[in-house]
Image (cartoon, rainbow, N blue to C red; front, side):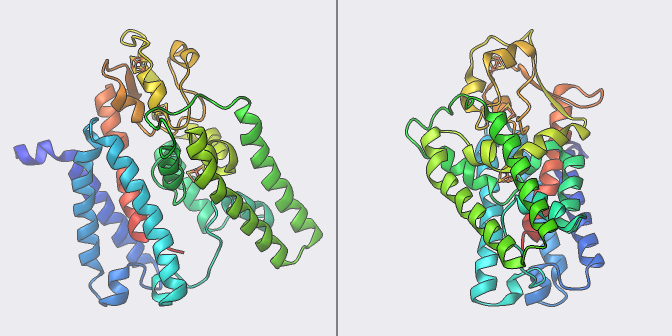
Length: 330
Ligand code: SF4
Ligand code: SF4
Ligand code: SF4
């Protein structure tokens, strides 16, 4: 009984992961799990492994000391699973692809595709559902590209501290959303050929990877996610549909500025600390919570205390993360 009580969050993650994966398995016409493809009928073994992984990771994420390291590490796993299977699917066997129907692995296609097609498809619906359930966690744990930007942003000189906000960053962020929408609309109304849309998306993707590779380490910040990718701005604007919030408790904050230095999104300045909340582009990654030794960074969710609110948020994000990890394929 004591074991169960102590591990309620981890058990919750494991059960949610198992339920989501069994549901996905039952609802799809094809084998959505890799185990079912290679070892027909044994998909339940993968579900059990995923649930165990979720159980184990919960401890790592709930401990503020280990949370930032495991968040960075596990976020890269999503990129490795996604791009690794894409590569294997294209070079070794289509069994590594989700359906065999390729689309471009560039996050902005979620926005561009909606405008270009004039309707929602599976990816935008998944994206919006994720925001509803986990707020901005798409941009701190779930997207296949953000983990690489975080990794590169820590690769530059003096990587111990991230840099301060880039001046006028919202011009870049909103400009990117408007540009993608405008070009997609133009292509749609001009009836442009498919190859032109594909070429533009490919160019955008290449530009994005160049920023990840060279600009983020130089600027010591997630420049791709913070300034270039339109989905980052869209997440920042839509995340409020989720009720979880992050606040700086003025009674505990000593203005030591440690949280400022560990924020990869430059979402904390002295003025944000005065206001008691991070900037709009905060992705609730929780790194500032781990860095604050004064207990001033608090999660707020309904009437729960800060610790329980954080636990509830971690459970939801981790359950989604492990499910995504199992299904991260094109
Ligand atoms: S900003 Fe774009 S690339 Fe970065 S994590 Fe969000 S969706 Fe992914
Ligand atoms: S680390 Fe904590 S105490 Fe220091 S400035 Fe940030 S919120 Fe305040
Ligand atoms: S303010 Fe804190 S939770 Fe928000 S992005 Fe920065 S480090 Fe992460």
